[in-house]
Amino acid sequence: MSTAARHRQDPAADLRPGDAYVQSFARGLEVIRSFSAGAPRQTLTEVAARTGLTRAGARRILLTLQTLGYVESDGKRFALTPRILDLGFAYLSSMPIWNVAEPLMEALVEQVKESCSAGVLEGTDIVYVLRVSTRKILRNTLGVGSRLPAWCTSLGRMLLAGLPDEEVVRLLEASRIEARTRHTLTDVDSILAKVQQARRQGWCLVNQELEEGLLSIAAPIVDRSGRTIAALNISGQANRTPPRQMQETMLPPLREAARAVSQRLAVG
Image 1 (spheres, rainbow, N blue to C red):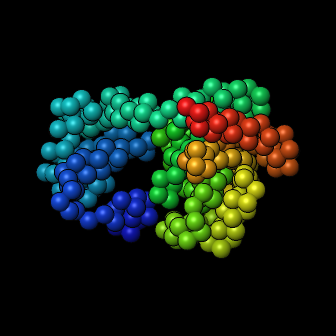
Image 2: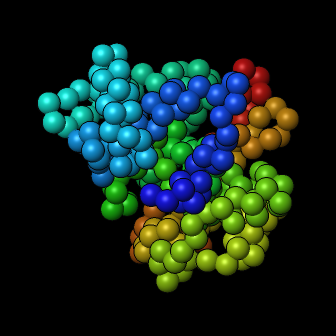
Image 3: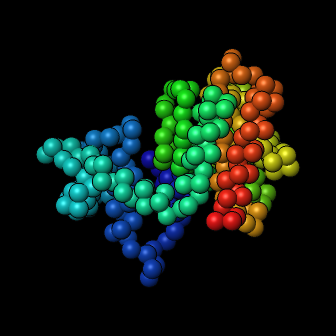
């Protein structure tokens, strides 16, 4: 992966080491992040190539992670262990919003009979932090920790709508914008206009821009000051629920669920 590509994916790549920067720790996180659904088990050489580390550097980090129980090895290939989930659960358990949101999302799914997700913005991506599913709607099943680009998703555009336009433009220009379907908007100005529309109306619908046949509609979760801190969405199939029907039948309960989460956070 090129340096430019890494910067698009992770704004932290622009940080420069200083007195408060622990480079070995940062490299350890890069090694952890090199594992994915597409690379669940890797050789030392593969880890080094994916992270840009030397084989010796990658080996030291992998052996340290193995000693701590976060990585296992069969002698040739390395893989993450379930203990790595402790890192993600530490975030979830430290944020009361997700304890508040989950039962409301479950009730919403029961009502609309479609999947519901909660996500936050991280750089140019959205990260799924909660998901209540009814059925598989994407070719790749999404789960907690999954990432999707913000610019072409309802969650992403709703989260971008909580930012000033200049920040939105900066993130869009840092994104890898490309046509994913025949419906995908690829012009920065057009996408910005959709983000501005989402900001004005307080919700966002994306029609088959991420994947053919996939519809999603999102509403913001806000804190006491009115700042958007997360978003909820409902996803469905266009051949089963056309956009107008989704807006008419699913948007009201979605917005009510998002408002309920926001209100409970305000009094919590």
